[in-house]
Every structure is written in structure tokens, then in C-alpha cells.
Amino acid sequence: MDVLCEHYARILARVEASARASGRTADAVRLVAVSKYHGPEAVARLAACGQRRFGESRAQEGAAKIAALPDTGLEWHFLGPLQRNKARLIAGRFQWLHSLESLSAAEALSRHLAASGSELRVLIEVNVTADPRKHGLAPEHLPAFLEAYCARSWPGLRLSGLMTIAPHGGPEAVVRRAFARLRYLAAESRQAFGLAGFDELSMGMSDDYEWAIAEGATIVRIGRALFGPPMAAAQAP
Image (cartoon, rainbow, N blue to C red):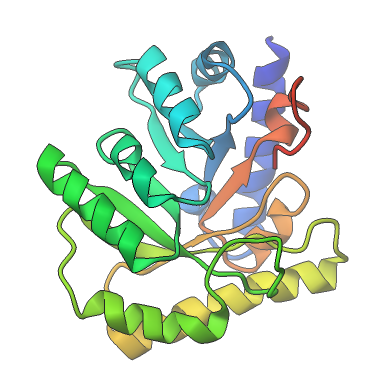
């Protein structure tokens, strides 16, 4: 068996076991394979093992990879910070965006989506730990953002939940506290604004995805534990 398939089978089993341990069904948590820094050949290998969801953090790199793998039935997630001028590369290519944090980006995305007739499921990124090195809205700014967002119509955008990144290498209690905070913010927002379908929690990466699942994650983003460290960079999640 391909070593990549071995990694995938092992991680998928752990994801499913963690979902069951949290009182959910085995398929309640979806695995996004973070393929940034890895070429289309690595994506094709993992797709051959059965994986269908892939995540990219750079718009141009992701668009090129998608173009290199046409008609494969893959689902593409954009994970990185979104610059407004890159919206045209996201719309019509990716099916998910995990990193919305500005109305101007939403406006640009909606305009391009309306032109292409496609839909994008959107998660708002929240910086639950107030880490200045991370992107995302401060938790206290989330209600005002949602109020402004809900006051307008956004053709092509489907608001689906929240995303966060926990403290890297932190102890379990600290990391789980960050994930629990996101779960609380999602529930609070859902009730306050009557948000139907606002159920997705994208949280958890290679070092902490089992803790994230225990705290309610519906999507985990795993790169290094699947693909191994990239040759050109060591920042993969």
C-alpha cells in the first residue's frame, strides 16, 4: 500500500473514532487534506486512496492545482487569508472558504460568484486567542460583523459557520478552551441572529484535531500528518 494511503487510513480511523467518542456518528466530522506546498501529483495520490476534500491557502497556487486536476470530483476549500483582489480566483473554483473576516471581501466574492452562477460555502474566521500573528475577527467584534452581514443580500454566498486556529503547541486544557470558545460563539450567534445552517465548526489541525473533535469540530484540517513535512516549507498544519 502507498505510504500516503497508510497515513490517510490511520488518520481517518482516528477521526471517526474521535467522532464516536464525542457522541456523534463516524461521518459527522469531515477531513480536509491540506495540500498547500504539495503538488497536484500528491493530491492525485491521496485522491486515489479515497480522499475528496482538499485545502489550499494561496489563491494562485490553489487555482493552478485545481486546473491541473479537472473532472476528478474533488471538493476544494480555501483556508488562507483572503485578499479582495484574489476573490476572482476563489469564486467558481473553490466550494468552501474558511477565512472570511471582512465585508469588502464578501462583496467581491459575491460579485464574482453571481457572474459565474456558482455558490461558495463561507465560514467566518475568529481569532479566539487574540493572537496578533493570526488572522480573524476578535470575538467581541463578531456580533457587529454578523449584524452588518445579515443586513444585506449576498448572492452566491452561503454562510455556514466559524473557523479558528488554536494556540500552536499549547497544553490540552488551553487548546480545548479555545475550541470550546468557538463552539460557544457559534451557538450564541446562531440564536441571536436566527442563522439557519450555521452549524459548521472548522477547527483542529495535525497536532490537535482529536481535541477539536471532542469540542465539537465538524471539519478538521490536516496536512503534515498526512503528507509529511513539505520540502520547501515547514509551516503546513
